[in-house]
Length: 310
Image 1 (tube, rainbow, N blue to C red):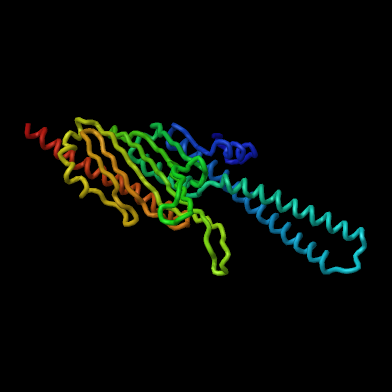
Image 2 (image 1 turned 120 degrees about the vertical axis):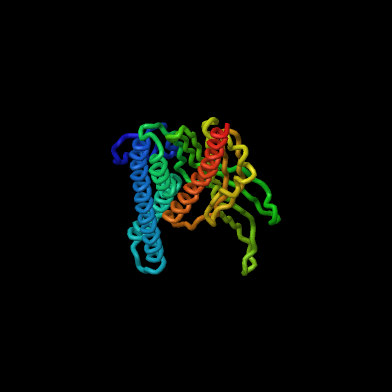
């Protein structure tokens, strides 16, 4: 991405075709690129608001013209024809602005995604060579997209309803820390959409669609020098006690090998507020790193003791 934050029309087209930011570069370079992503999303949101305002204006205008045609009497044929033409034009405006607004909604970037990444990189770079490359894959479109659907079938609890599940692995982050530990962080967001016919209070059947967030799955893998942490396998029985997580997270899997650690947690859906989403994700990921390094530090102490004893 270019260094300038000025957004061009071709950027919006490019985002629609390839909604991904991918790079293998220094933290400073990636953070600079993300400023452009922020500017791009702000442009999208501004255009979305503009289309919404134009659409509302067209709707109100069409209603006013329609009422005028019904209520007003004694209009000349020419005036009536003119009002009908205006009404048709306003209806066309509603259709066009609605479609344009839908296009901007489809490429609107979830704010927490580009807000979380700089915070994570700022945290990690403290223990990295500042020029060391970090591999980053950041998905920029929302999770409810057909290509992210991993299940589509009958609802297990509602007869006649259909259930779709969406799993969106939206962040992959890989790099090496100063102690030569390699890390890989994966963030996946899951949603379910249930759809079917439901009878309302009036007795009429209506087709309903409900979407619900199922939260996040966070996975962190560390690969470490075997000589430095040779006592890792010994800690396997007690490793779970070293894991400290926020109340919003639960431990799903922990693997301790002779030169690697793997931690996977499930995080409850945070509130819709992007700031809260970023803070909860950042806190969870930070504690995941700290927990695994607590295990590594214990292994290092045991390894050093064995070396001294021998």
